[in-house]
Amino acid sequence: METMETETAAPRTPSGQTPWLTEAEQCAWRTHLDVSRLLMHQLEKDLQPFGLTNNDYEILVNLSESQDLRMRMSDLATATLQSKSRLSHQITRMEAAGLVRRVNCESDRRGLYAVLTDEGMETMRKVAPHHVASVRRHFIDMLPPEALAALRESLGPVAEHLRGNRKA
Image (cartoon, rainbow, N blue to C red; front, side):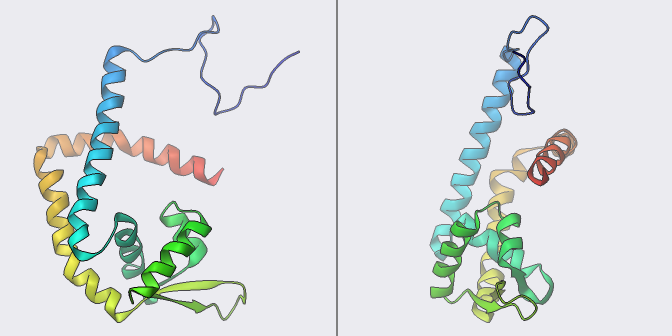
């Protein structure tokens, strides 16, 4: 009986073997994982004095950059890579802190918007300079400009591929 291969199946060589990572590939992969985890941990730590998490900040950024400082909850869930349920709990906490509020969608009675409040915008104005300084101190300033350019160029196709997988 033949089996169908899917895009998520492990790639196989002509001999049917999994092509294990080379030492250099393994090192690159693990370095990427270490940097991703450590950087996000540090950025989260730097947001704590403001009473925010990385998820809070990401939601505030998305809302502050959106038209009318609002986004449909489903679009915000997609933008922040959160399930609708998880985002709903997150928005509930942020509502209690006065940063956002929910508003019914006039054109779709089942739809809801998350809206940035004045307090949420003021929080963004206060926190954003500190967050940018943290990103700069722990990431941008650690790399020379040519390494940043190489990083953008090399990770761009990966990001594009993963965005495409989300739509499929």
